[in-house]
Image (cartoon, rainbow, N blue to C red):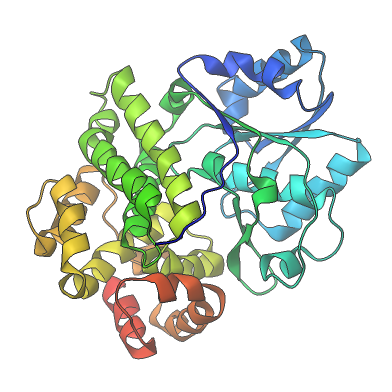
Length: 376
């Protein structure tokens, strides 16, 4: 058994701890680029609060607020140029997973020259990155706990991660109070994404003792608490549980990667800019049905943590969860048509090859075509 574990981040976990942003960021710089989205942190007042915390610590702030879901390589480039123009020396990511991923890419591109796609496809290796302070506002991607930055190339629809220890955050402020302003539909989507991270890291052929421990714990925490907070019945402890599970899922996939559900979803959202969690909701039950009998022990372990008893229960329990979250859907409902399938299969093999390789069951192109068709 061999594995490496390298996540050199400081996790500042607890309700209300976003107030510590200024003193934590001041360790790393005096001119902060605050990366955020187009609306939610402004509407909630969180952006203004964060800027105030930074100002009180003697940090000058510059706001880059153009990030949307499925962040584009071109937006990351624009953000890096803005960062360099203002001579920023620390990057603060404030928002959901897309924003945190884009903040990572901006911190990287601010000090590494050349085409970002060369780094994503490992044609070039980066040398450094600006220090990152990440503040997640959704309990979904776990981006605060790893060195992934998922980006979409608008020229060809490739959706793939920049992967490097250079963009592991210096500090992640994980405050579950910030999650409570999410619309229910967003909570359902990101919560299911967090569950998928943990399930996939556990299913992965390169799963190891550390990722196994985190994955199974996260699956259980989400299974016991996500519906409660979605229905409005969750207390602070339940919010903390799902939030911490999301972070653990992000850490687990940094160790063991994702497998076929993410591998097959990325071409769909890269092509049609669909909500990532909804793409996973359409694909994961189908892939589970195709896979569970050929990897029974692992799927049985997942099923048990979701209230089932054996591997055959796994897809059913996932579907029941999706029903409770009003998230059950199909790819056709997300805008995918049968004519898209050949491109998505080819893109999956070209861009998401590790996800195919590490899935516990080997599928060829014809089987993947059938999975996509079933998910329509």
